[in-house]
Amino acid sequence: MIHEINLVYILSSIFFLFFLIREFVSYKRYLPLKYFFTPSLTLILVIMMILSISAYGTDKYRLMIILSLLMALVADTQLMIEEISLMKNGAVFFIIGHIFYIAAFADNVAFNSWNIAVIVILAAVNLVFFRILIKSAGKKSVQAILYILILDLVVYFAIARLNNSLSLSGILAASGAILFMISDFILITNAFIKAIPHSTVFTWLFYGPAQYLIVLSTFVFVK
Image (cartoon, rainbow, N blue to C red; front, side):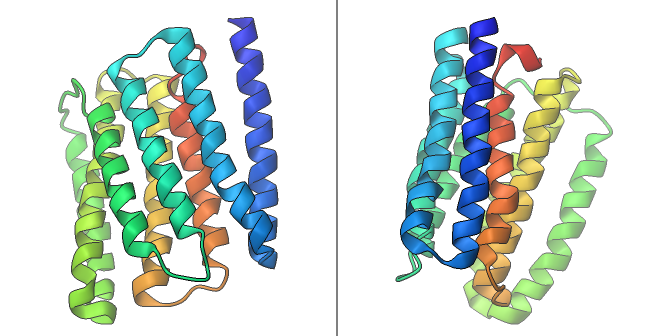
């Protein structure tokens, strides 16, 4: 257990060091360095998942998360390229990754009355965002709306998973899912509504920690 915790600390330290460097070189538009550090971050998380699986076994939760990360690795590599737009290609892999996350979070989830509040909040946020999106992008917004609805399921089931037990693992996963939604809203805003200067910096500001928290939720010592 101590050896495992030490490895997680080391990998976490490398992750956040790379994360800070990635944000800096992205802001400065040092593209070769951005193209190195961006996929490296997701690769570190894949390594952390391999550590989690080797330590605790291959259950459905861990398997679905590592599969989602592998899809994210492909998507991140495509979306980081600035010379050409591979947004549609990257979105396909992110959707597949979201489906894996839904499979992970929705497993044996019960329903409690407070979950209605989660649904209402998600619906309210969607209503406001969809109106802005449709006004700005028109018919082009259909794909983005479908993507967000899938993302809603990720967030809902990650939060509803707390019905089973109010554990640190569940809180980490739910927090990660919420940060993931914020990052995707920034990404979609930049792509369909209004260009955001240095949008990749702001997207990853939430996306990087989101993926990290979900990965950290798989380790026994945080349960």
